[in-house]
Amino acid sequence: MSAPRIPHPIIFSLLYLPFGALSGFVSVALTFMGKESGLSISDTSLLIGANLLTGWMKWVWAPMVDATLSPKKWYLFATTCSAIGVFTMAAVPMNNETLPILLVVITAASLINSIVGMSIEAIMAVTTTETERGRVSAWFQAGNLGGSAFGGALGLILLQELPSPWMAGAIMAGTFLACCTALRWVPDVRAHVAVGGVLRSTFNVFGELWAMLKTRPGMLSALLCTLPLGTGAVQGVLGQDAIAGYWGAGAREVALVQGLLAGALMTAGCFVGGWLCDRLHPRTAYAAIGLALAFVAVGMGVSPATITMYVGWNMLYSFGVGIAYAAFTAVVLSAMGTGAGATKYSFFASLSNFPIWWLGLLLGRVADSALGTAVLPKGGGEAVPAGAFDVWLAGFMAAISAPLGATSALYCEAVFGVIAVGVFVVVVKLLGGSRSWAVR
Image (cartoon, rainbow, N blue to C red; front, top):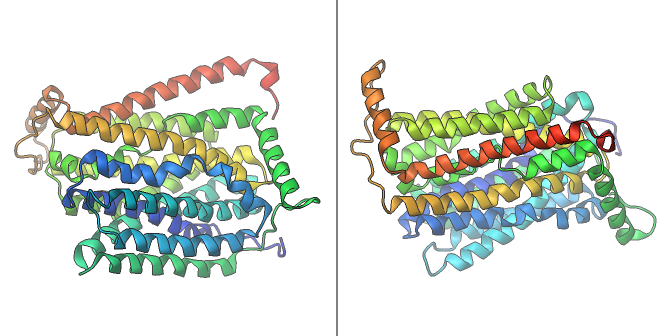
């Protein structure tokens, strides 16, 4: 670094906002508008899938960030391109004929947007001390999840209220570019350049990655990231119009539970997750919250189908997702060390994005199929009176005896979460006594 100053972690939140906001714009704003454009649940799930498609492949181009330009220069380039991408998404008309074009635009924008995250991760790896891992993880993921909620809520409101969709894209793009001003408080981190040029530097970066994976913490962290834990994948399904209607919820409730209020709860969850990881091992905290989210999904599925339950369970789920994401970052920081930060973090993020990607597509397909045979509950928009246990019990019995319908995605995610925790516990037990895995 050219200067010893260490930025306050809130700077990472501001810089990371475009990364999360672009994903939120796709998963909330575009996804909800898909129903009004005549797209099916499966088709709108493809929008989320296109956004996540490159997420589990980004470790392939991450060494370019470590071995060429400085992280600051990469951030400016990637954020500018992401701004162009979100504008184009809004400008392209959404219908069955233009869906392939929109999917290509989303995929390309998400690929470039991944470099936004990589550039920050490269800086964070150098500037974060061991005692600051929990705190930095909290602020870092607060920018990711808070930005996602911000982009989803603002994007949905702008798309519905402004005369032309391109105007919404222009406002979102301007917000992305404004975040670049936070770079003035970030130290200059040099590229991971070695004698021999870029090619030699790239080989060195992969060498550091391989050396990390040969350690017990590296391998256990990699395994944990591949499991469908704490993904938040069902949120994309719950925000779709047909699914939200099961609970009697509409655009206002979706904007509430996946918008700014949800962002505030996820942000609060990030700080709880950071606090938790300062007191428990990050891998233990991550597995525990993944199991807790499975129980939350089941709880929502068996509760009465009312707006009150829809909002309440979504809020609790959002809070848990915030804890899980902060724990994930702490897991990565505890395993990666300081060198080749963009590549190492991107490798773990790629592993964790893969289950988010395939599970999100699977949950959309499951919900789409189940809704074809399920009967939506009548009077779902009525809230359960406070203290009326008998009314709630009647709703509970109706929920568990009704066809799965919209709740099928919740149960499916819960099953995968429980299985994932079981697999991780078994592997830890099997490796715990092996001397060959004792390397720290």
